[in-house]
Amino acid sequence: MSLNTIDIVVFIAYVLGLIGVAIYVSREKAGHEKDANDYFLAGNSLPWWAVGASLIAANISAEQIIGMSGSGFKIGLAIASYEWMAAITLMIIGKYCLPIFLEKKIYTMPQFLEQRFDSRVRVTMAVFWLGVYVLVNLTAILWLGALAINTITGVDLMAGMIFLGLFSVAYSLYGGLKAVAFTDIIQVVLLIFGGLFLSYTALDLIGQGNGIVAGFAALTDQAPEKFDMILAKDHPHYIDLPGLSVLVGGMWIMNLSYWGFNQYIIQRTLAAKSLEEGQKGIAFAAFLKLLMPVIVVLPGIAAVILLPELERADQAYPQLMNLMPVGLKGLVFAALVAAIVSSLASMTNSIATIFTMDLYKSDAKPRSEQHYVTVGRIVSFSALVIAMLVAKPLLGQFDQAFQYIQEFTGFFTPGIVVLFISGMFWKKTTANAGLAAAIGSFVLSIVFKYAWPTLPFMDRVGIVFLSCLAIAVVVSLFENKVQDNAVDLDGVSFKTTAGFNVSTVAVIAILIAFYSAWW
Image (cartoon, rainbow, N blue to C red; front, side, top):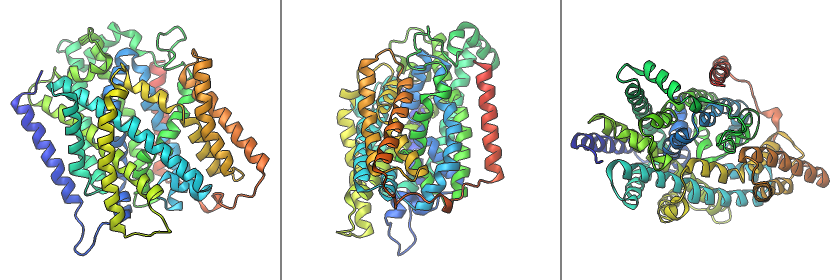
């Protein structure tokens, strides 16, 4: 089903408007040229609302909207744990990790690892993250985004990927993180409005025109099995979300790695005006995460009733969009594309930052600031081209791409969390111990996956984390070296404002209410 002329006009207006805003906010004062700090960290100028909106815009993309809606169709509300548990994880990162990162005045996560350990750790992790970002995350965003466009408009998958890539380049390549972050305000507003309207429409259809309350009641009556938050062992998808592990097990490790030590995400907070502004932005993002299941999971559950004959779970959200009225369908389509291109822009900017600042830049051969900006732009464009070429071979055969991404990254996240947590909070951790944990994470994950295939991957993540932590402790104690680069926690203030503390209590209370209601 193709878009109506009015829908196309609405969509084109959005595209042109966003590019115009990006160009406007990217302007520099007369006589000033963009330097590396301007391009990669927005000149440390982001206010809290830009930080929070950009965190969500970077996070919520095709892999979230299309992928989580697909998992909502297959599994149900239990997949929302990724969103809801992320909210409390964000508050923890804001209180305990962000103060350390901002005190170190870093551009990238690998840069912090060099300050704490040595250049080997920095280069190893920089190469690893570049590989994952280009070959897993960027490809997933492009592929699922193009799949959505294909389902709605019939446009060829490769043509869809090219459009998404060129669109993201058009508004972000020149302005860098500043253009990305400030246009993310528009993207998030549109995403939330469009997503809520789609959920409203779906529930109203299920309720036969009697409103969303009647629709939600009918949905829970007709598909009660989709509203189990904690899956029992006999559930067909228990291996994806193994019961209480979503509350006390491996999901914590997944979330800490993603929200706390992932360049693609944390770069927004590194660009905040101050620590307090960064923490306000994180709290804002946490509340938005509590809302996200209504936008990205509920439509997938609704599709169980409205579109029970779907061939692929990941088609749930795009097919529901075809139920929207003329005009609003174009707006919701624009919201979906907004989520995709904002994540593409964020991802390519992070790829450019890591490559330029961690691998290319050298104190032995200094270059001008403008040179590094140019290199960053070339890397951003090149990463998109590579991702387009490998997207179909890597992801074309998967029914639930979101679950594939989670399991693949789960090979590495236990070691990454050990590397950062021990590096920040245990002064005896050595560089060799950190590397052993990082490498051990992949090796042990592979061993467990094939030697114990019935072990849910989330439980595997928890077990591998504890194993890697033990490895790091044993190696550190064996080497017994004085760590001159250890983080001086006495020089870091973990004190937070009353507003941040109240927000933390509110997030916890809301989570308790959600899990109590749908246990």
